Length: 188
Image (cartoon, rainbow, N blue to C red; front, side, top):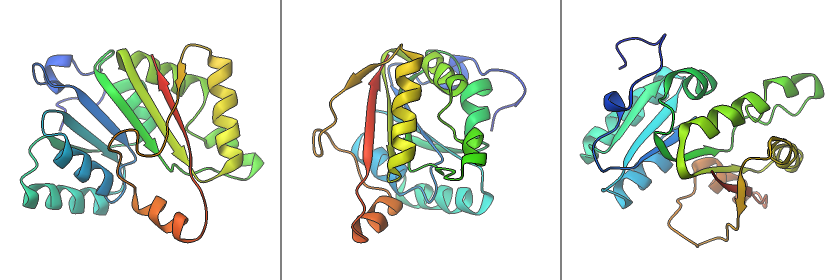
């Protein structure tokens, strides 16, 4: 837990020397976080989740598995990215299956906005990546447009199986219903 939630953390408070940090915004049940931490023991992982019940379950599971390279922060994703995490400290930031807020009057609540993209840019170290997935075609088109308007990221190819990337429970559920996920892989 940060000592103070009202100031940006220093890199020394979050990073361990020589270890890249990956952040999973909205880590949910922690399945993705857990599998990534187990597969990449040389990297550190931070899951961000606002729901206490989920945070407790994820922490219990990580502890039971002895995954000391993964931690969970109970906080809202947008605040964490825009105000808490240190600049140029994250090697990869994952945003998987966020709420698409499909109603037009709710689009302002979508996480992918200009201010959020600037915060992600600021968090990523040079060459760092932002990975986004959604099953909602209209939200994917929205995200592509916002990223293009932002204009700073380089879009990379992201083919299935290009590198280890476990599926979230949402992804498994939606694929079982015949829905496909679309993804953006962006580099600073």
